[in-house]
Length: 545
Ligand code: OOB
Image (cartoon, rainbow, N blue to C red; front, side):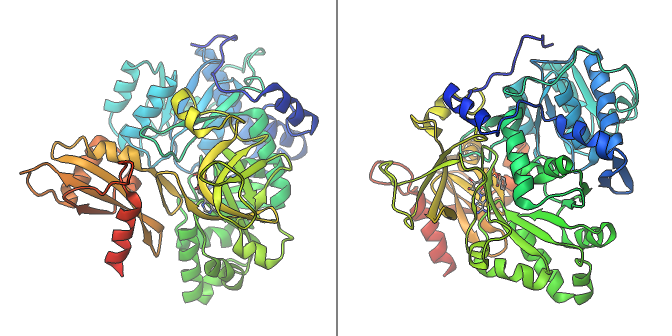
């Protein structure tokens, strides 16, 4: 268990920059829990979360998170401790988040689509004292995985919907021991929680986010996106992801005193019904979901009328075609705001008063005047505006290092502390367009897949000697993944079902399964002997032509 003096380690900002961010009023040295505290006096009775037929006021959200915090503190959990949390899109996700922040326990919010491989990896990295999951997830349906985690040192394991009160999260949310006087969030300049990196490496990386940096990105996003107490925000993307959490996200909505309406997924039928029933005004979506919404609205004028209250759609996470962007206001009757962000920090928005050509054709400009963005050529020199180059950035809410990953950090950051995101962008008059990618990642409709992670797992198959995962264009998802494989001489032919079974048995999330497989006698190499992924991608495009 943690002690008051222990802290979760992270790479801090240099003193001079930290001072600048404080002087400019970005870092205000308040914990993220003040997002709730701020609402209580003003609007405790106002609805904070609508989740199915359950409605939670700000007073409820406060009380429930205090109940849980009090019970957790009683077990000795506190500063220096971490938690691994995996919950679906339910109010409990926010309640647990605030409860943990209150007592200075640092959570990782795993995605609900994550399976054994991802959960075990996050567990290994943060060594959590507490795990919170759901019986609704295959991993926790029986007790095997839970027992394994206990064996590995998880002192406390709570499950959302368990019958045994000793481990039922529902029970832990009921009033119990009061929150001890001396319990408090971690200091504002220290780690509040971990964000998940989309990643491009063999193992998923964690991003320490401090109260100060995250809180600033939330407050500024609220301004930029016009969130108010009247905002009714539909959370249909995975709620722990940086986009629906903080850009401006549910936390931005709580900051402004508005209402978050939970949806299980962005599936349009359910979402349209929710929008009509709850008079939703704002929604963040990834491009493939927008395409589905457009199709439903176009096919069915009655459905389209359900969107009457919708005022603003934020679209981000993956490339969004200009032609599709233009159809959003036309067909859905709402305004559009493009978002180009990353869990590592930097978030760009088109502004609500921008002319249409910027809103439709760019991914916006950074939140902060102190977001420093460099667009670099292959030698690392700045390119002219209008020329594509690699994005590098530092600023008041862009992290300075992945958790316990010195080798990867040495590559991801340059000597000036700029984070190289692996995106290729074009900058004009301060606005960015995302035009490509140099990181070895597939962006499958906003869900990120690190090629190396999947390649390593494919290579664990006894019959596979070489593996390369590449992106292939897809009309619906933007990109899908294709695995090129070289099989051991004389091995039996391996079909896609057997390969998928192999990967699923290793416990990876289903979205990471290659959509296609191609068998080749050798992988093409570049002049320096690296796998020539460009050639592999081109061979797929030619195949489709
Ligand atoms: C968001 O965060 P992540 O961490 O899942 O992914 C970040 C990466 C970016 O580096 C970029 O490659 C891609 O996702 N991306 C976009 C994009 N927005 C993100 N690529 C093209 N166009 C866009 N608009 O995806 C995220 C975090 C906060 C807000 C919004 C998205």
